[in-house]
Every structure is written in structure tokens, then in C-alpha cells.
Length: 197
Image (tube, one colour):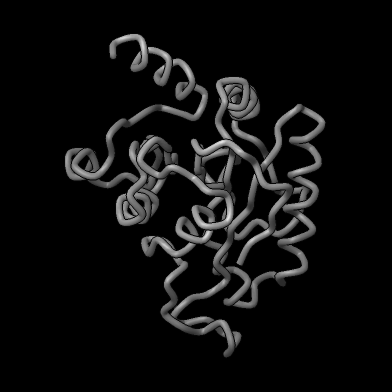
């Protein structure tokens, strides 16, 4: 499913996961009182926009299917988040989310879908709608599933953030192009890479 703003003419995207990437992962976040941006995330997102990227959120939200919070609650939180980012001059070109889970309590959301990461369905939906050049784009996330989905979608650069989700850093390196300590390090890494080309 998607929540989109006006389409952008840009073809290079920065895809990013939500929980654990731009905000602290407190587990099944349903309200603003538990939503905390990670230090440096807002500044990094703003810099990415100034560098010419469009920003696209790609997030699994099985809490909806599990009945922990409703889709309306998720949409309310997303609107609050988007509004907060807009006040900081950060525009999201699209928000794509998957409410499904194979063991969901809500029957209509109980399925093995093509959109839940590590499947690439949300990426392909964004590519079609926003005319994204996948090879020149980046995916940033804190889970191996983020990298697997991006790889299947043909995203050019996959960036894994260090977190407690990383069990085997050697194995994880095999699927990520870069491993960074946090989102705040991404803009400078991109600039360094461009200088070396």
C-alpha cells in the first residue's frame, strides 16, 4: 500500500526503512508519544534532498495485521511524521507500507504477499509510480531483509546500518555494499564515493 505526495521528476531515489533507521525502534510504534527521531537523521535527510535525491519510505508494518494497531493509526502517525519533516524542509515523495503477515490475526491481512520485505513489491510500486532509476538509487535500512528486498529490486547501492539486528557482520557484508554506524554518515559517504570516481 502507498501514501504518496506529488510526483517528482527526479529519477534518483533514496529509499529508507523507518523503525531503526530514521527513528528509534521501540517495537510496533503506533503513536507520536513513542516516535523518536534518531540523532542526525533529520539533518541527513535534509542534506540528501539538497543533493538531488527524492526520499521514499519503505516499511513493513505487520503490527496492523497482527491487530496491535490499526491502519488508521499508522496513517495518522505517518501524516504527523511527514508534517514534521516538511517543517524541516524535508519532502517525502512516497510512503509505502506492508500491513501483511503470514500469521496475522486479521484474516484479510494474513498472507504471504509480494510487498513484505524481503520481497521487493514496495520498491517496484515506487519505481513505477515515481519513475525511479533503481541502479542509481540507494536503500538504507537496519535489517538484512531491507538489503535482500533492495537487491531483488535492482537497487544500485545497499546501505546497512549497524544495529542489534546484525547477528553476523561478516555474512551481512555479503549483501550490503556499505555498512555505516548511522544515517548521519550517509551524505558524506556518498560525497566521498563521487569524488573517487
